[in-house]
Structure formats: structure tokens, C-alpha cells
Image (cartoon, rainbow, N blue to C red; front, side, top):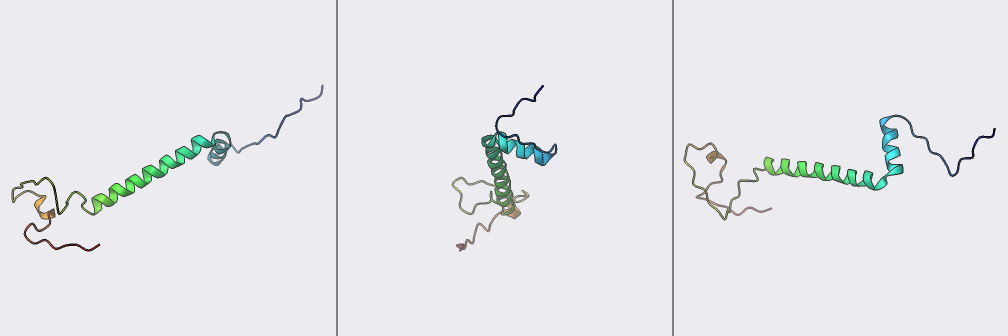
Length: 90
């Protein structure tokens, strides 16, 4: 009995993680592309929050709401000098 003919071309992927990723890009490119963009967005968000915290981002020199702190509060040492203010050049 003759073997049935295959229509089109068949692509075989390796049974590894890279083969799974290649098969995903072949079969569902929209899902794979949006997943990559989401991963890039998460990484950029983590880097942004890290840089914000590293530069003491919550310590703004000019605030619209003022807080009164006791002298023994541990956050007092992080504050800018409230008496002398110098314009910063960026």
C-alpha cells in the first residue's frame, strides 16, 4: 500500500528548550512577541525602581506636603539641609 503524500512542508524542531522556543515562534509569533515585550517591560520597570531607590527618590527637596519629624527619627539624617538650599544643576 502506498504512503500518503504530505501536503506542504514539514518542519521538525529539536526536543529541547531552544526547540520549544523556535516552535513557538513558528506557530504563535504574536504570543511570543508580546511575551518578549512584557519581559522587557518588567526588566525596565525593575531597573527604574532600583535607580529611584538608589538615588533616594522619596527625598524631594521641594514638596507640596510638608512632614514634621522628631529629631530622633531615623529618617532625619536622610533629609536635605532645610536651612540652606542650593540650586542643583543637572
